Length: 343
Image (cartoon, rainbow, N blue to C red; front, side):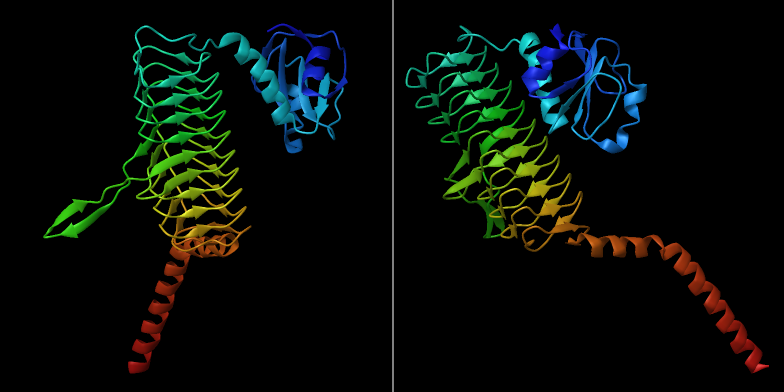
């Protein structure tokens, strides 16, 4: 990386304050940055770090004032991401072309500009759209459809008939289209219920590492446009997730639940089946959700309650040792009074 500060300002659409000819050679966090680096400050409450950082320049919000070189933007985090893309684009080398060590069935439809890494298998009837990159060691099953400009990292499994839109990113170890967890007790044993539906992933979705998304029993499990899923998330059969949701690590969503547009599920939240998480709702970390959550509501705790109520309950729980001690003291006083009355 070797850019003038004025060039970076133009790329991110910012307002430059300082020497436009400063040469930027690297990127870093604000605490770790050194001379030649550019960094960013998104939260004004950490503005004191502007005085201590070793960075040559900082991307900030427009309301920050500083004597050091800064690029003021509407969204410093997004602007800095553009700078990171410059570096990643220069340093990251994706597979090019179709490896001779891959296996592509003659009945698969692969666009001319697709790249496929070694030891990947693409089954009969599968389709991969223009500009998509499939790393090595992946499995693309029968009649899977992968859209344009997708990026599928190594050791990903996409099972039969899964539909994936455009510009989807799938990280390593993820399994899409595994059987839904369906069993019925019959004659004293668990009988497997066939899962004959599909998974549909819409455009601009990003799916983290080691995520599992089960196929529907009959219809489809759906991940809406623009949704971002962190690592180690389990999404069960027939779940519908709306547009632009955020689902953070180790969340588990049970079957047939609906998560509406813009909802956020924080880490390790557990969601029971057949309920609805409303539009723009927020489910706190480690919450256990046992009933539907209204739109634009924040819940936390187990069982999940409105966040303020859950916080009050938790505050009371923290006082239990003190309360127990007071109760014991009162019991001793009552016992002492009773004994004195007997005399």
